Length: 381
Image (cartoon, rainbow, N blue to C red):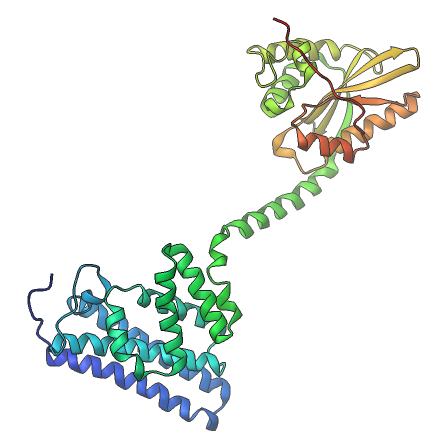
């Protein structure tokens, strides 16, 4: 509670008067605008308005005890008729004078809409000040109807909507509607976006451009060197998540269920890939690698089956290093293999995928694969 009466020094009164003079000078500058170059006049007026707001901020910093009843909850205003009450009222009036000028300059397009939006933020801040409503009720008839509607409407919105985050958005929409300033309407909506989105997108675009240049140096070829088997296994483990697991992984012992890989996955894969690398092309199982400057960045495990209708191929695995994605490595692997199969007279290639792996499904469909069946599994106790 405020139990003591604050003394108003002559310096304080002079400072308040100084703010009044600053505001008056803006009005005078605006009056002579027509007789000067319009661009210079606008800049001059806006600078004066900014100067007046800076002076007001300086006054606030120098007289915190005086303005606390306005901004702090639980601090009552001084009794009416006291010098302290008059000083606080004069302070609020100077703020409102600047608000009125901001609205006036927005109406005649002296102030750009985006700059005006920053002033509306100040309007909202004052509306939420605990000590503002009683002062406003006593002084509002000193101001033009537009400012009265903005502040009266804002106070009613605060009472109608209890959530501060919604209050602010509604207030901006209200000011936008009342003053016909569309920029203000979307002022808070911009805050919902991640400010880093555009930055990350620009980096991704740059990275993708670089990757596409590097993609020119990618070579696809059969893998027939057993020494590379451990690298293939490591690449698989580092880039195949649980969504990769399909019925084949469970049947072959690579995975223990639909969500968990085998604890010794890497060693199992090393043996499997070692065996496949011994086979000549188009026999049993083959490995095809994608290399960039001789570095392994992706591979495919292709298996061949002979049936009554001829030989068909099954793409059992296709893995791409996550650091080299968006370079169309998977597409290059499938395209290269399809050409090899066509030359060999093999006309069918199959693939399997986890039922939840939508990314893989879209990729396969884009590469010309079509869904022809679903695999069901029953666990028998």
